[in-house]
Length: 216
Length: 216
Image (cartoon, rainbow over the protein chains, first blue to last red):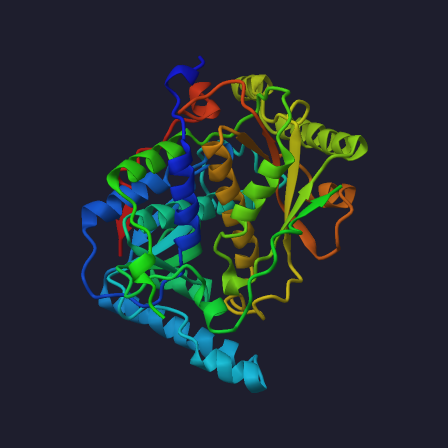
């Protein structure tokens, strides 16, 4: 059944604005304390479930981390992993790493842990026999959908990957087949930027994109 | 430096349209033969490089696969992996799997292989000590950005994951540190749908999203 007749067109104005959305999406680590409406959070998660998934397996699992004890466990997990990461740098890099703010765990009103269900039966294994990692890649697409949709609302998202994922999963008491893909801090940003903080602070420059397409 | 003064607002009209973009993005396997303008392809790849990446590592590597020999190798790789996948199903599932069209390798004017550079030095390792998989996750975010931007243009993308990734990487003659994340067929779709083909053909239903947020 062809549905071209009612398929949407995206005009020049939308495309320009979509480009701005992509360019102004940021990893946010500085949040205002105002809460995020739960209905809005649910709405963003629902839209995230429209992401592509291998074999239509829909393997994403979203957990809102709200208990003080669990948030503390995650903050301690980060602190430990970050100390170990710091110990891997020397000299000037080490001093610069120590000055970076790499998470907003303390102030962000919403903590969202996003898991892949490695035991998912939906999709009946289609598309993932030779590349089983596509289950987790599907979850990343949902995270990215959430991120862009949140930015549409002016809501900031920060992805914290400086965590021991096994310990984090254990602290959150989820089914044994779930693997942590992303731990997100979500809230209203204190400031807006069109450049990544790591670029602005001189940690890493943007690579030239002109040469980005190799031909084979 | 705060730049809130010039940060964009996304109004209700844009948000409605963005939702349509997410809902009408599809995995496309049926393409018209018309070519895709190379400038457009470059533009979409450049926008994809504005995706988030761990430690601003920008580990995505895009390869336009154009040689007949390499495309044939990929098509044979798919055919072999797909036969093995078919052999994993029995009875009615097997019959239904055999009827599915799972790729558009023969007709799509553009083949885009997207790799993660596991040896990337950009970012100096930041954010990926405990979760090194975030390098590949960053590439998935770039693929998803490309996919949405392509759909804005009316361009269809299909992600082919029924491939032996090691053999595919070898066939494409890329640096040894690159790992295949996604092999994309890109072109003008023959038809438009707001539901996934696997749902439409009864392979897998959409999961209810209402219960998608667990609280811990």
